[in-house]
Length: 158
Image (cartoon, rainbow, N blue to C red; front, side, top):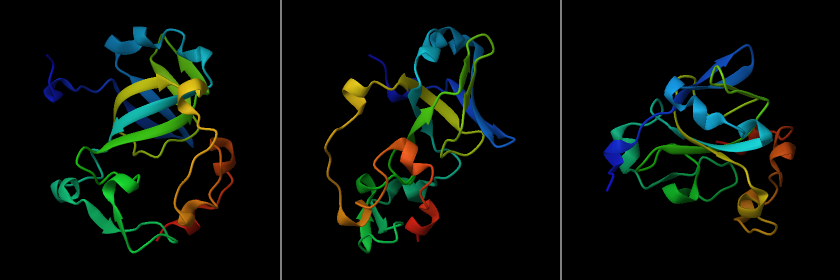
């Protein structure tokens, strides 16, 4: 049986000239075969640069969302401050270079140098939810990845 100690990075996130890239370590580039057949992917990453030991033990904190309640639980937020600082981002795949191990994406909400943990292709059958509910403070948020590009996210955070 494997343990959490077996968790390993498959690459890193870089940013240059307004573009982001996922740089896959050479030993994992064979795993990119046919990823380019997909338009989107789910990226799991380790928030190593944004989290302290105190963050990892804090389970409630002031809500970072402008219209939310005063306090919010870690599991009701997307904050990297959590027991295991694993980030999850949906990205658009602009280019997948299987040979060099470079995946070009328009944006990801992670810092350059962040370790990548995994890549999973986006499957609407398991990843898209036709009807969902959330708290009132975020009901006015965009209802799609595409619409969120033009949304004023700055106004949503305290």
